[in-house]
Image (cartoon, rainbow, N blue to C red; front, top):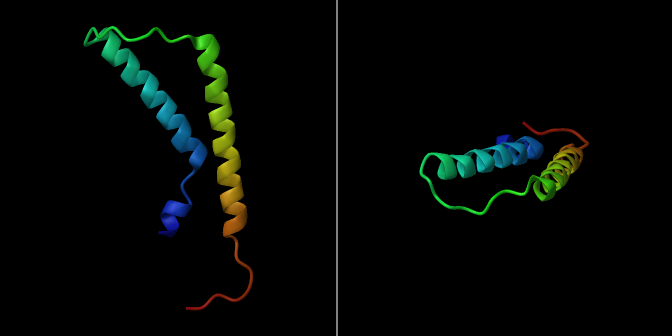
Length: 73
């Protein structure tokens, strides 16, 4: 369970963004699906915001996970 708490949320978000873009282009170019065209002027700021939230979330969770005092065991 400790391993899951240590996951870097920003890395997960960035990975999901890259995965989503890759899936989109695969569906359009390989399978010929007619999906809505991506408007990069609107998408890239959202991606930057999501990445920033992920970095802050990861930093906040690491800050809150440090417990002071003696450890048992």
